[in-house]
Length: 417
Image 1 (cartoon, rainbow, N blue to C red):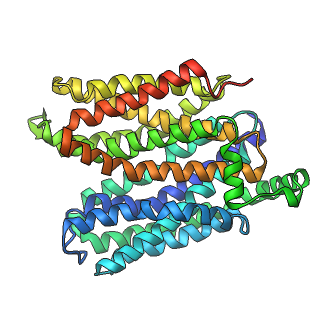
Image 2 (spheres, one colour):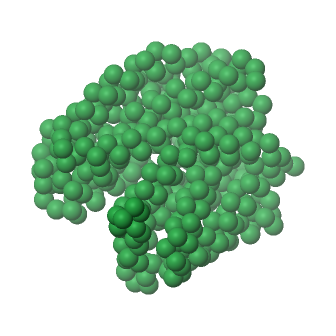
Image 3 (cartoon, one colour):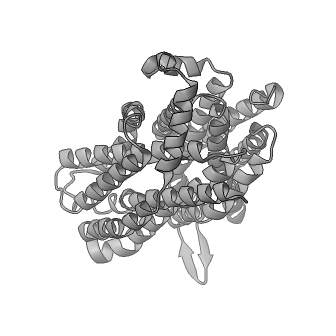
């Protein structure tokens, strides 16, 4: 492994750890806010649902704006701005008392997350060398979700003891203490400046497109429409449908098991499965990313993962024994981890042959598509549950995945010419 590759790995790890620290406050809310909404000054659980989704909805218009902002500031400056906003929003959870102020805080967090995620995507594109984007995206995905794991575990363990407000201040203070050490060693701007000079030398200023023109141009690029279609399906199925319905469905099927004399209910099982998903991320994601780097067609591994996921989604609502159902759920969550990394690696590969400006446009469109899918997934899923039941949700998702899988297998849209 040469020095450039080692440096790229270290830079990506720093970015993922910065993201993880900033993510703890947001993740804590998913556990604590539904339980302590009165302490937060809210009037109903409906407001809780709105607050936990508004940060995703606001990112739909914010992502293109953040992309334009990154044309005028460095990646390091964008990360620093995101960190400041994340600290302020996490700390604000400790003293705001009204629903409008909560809405404002969650919108600011949406901006912080757009800066963090797009900054990470752009940084990884700059750091990619010799077809190693899968490895770098795997490192990023595997480590930044540790912030979700820590935030939810601390939320579940300390909320009753400390309360929402004290816990929010504690997590804000932890971010203040940890992030400066990581930012101090971040050297991504040196790589970015070199890349910008090369891009400007190869793309004359009159040909540098922006806004809608740039998006329409890359949309016509080979494989980009299918990349966005797969991203939409992935986000709807995993980040939207599976994440939002897992605990409810576990309770509906009266999932429970006895361990050492203690009976564990559906909600506990679902939370444990999600924690397991983020716990294996630092090991599974880099492995899958490295495996995809060795493939001549990066979509091949994704296609097989889609097929396995479709089969597991078909089995998921069947009346299986408890351990069989848990095994299927674990398999599904493993395909979720694999798909996230494979999709990111594929996006990096598809955009890799384009100019720096078009690469960023592709990654921005990809990020917006993921947010659209994550926002649509819960709404569509619960609408289907209300009208047709849980099996229709999972079998519909299986059909969607199987359709994409078959198309990719037959047409091989991402194969090199």
